[in-house]
Image (cartoon, rainbow, N blue to C red; front, side, top):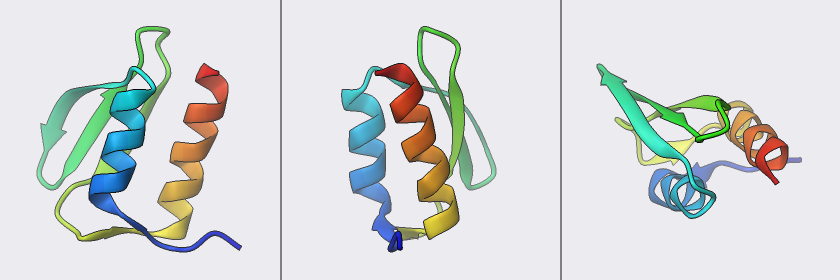
Length: 64
């Protein structure tokens, strides 16, 4: 089972994988990789829910 993750750690993983923040609307930021893969991450919270983190992991897996 996937647990909640700190927002800072998730953003660091995305940046290390080559993702860049594309745009921010409210408390959510859209991150996009140069290959075109994108994922939305909420910034207004200290932790990322397991479901959102699962989407981030899928995006990271597609890039590698």
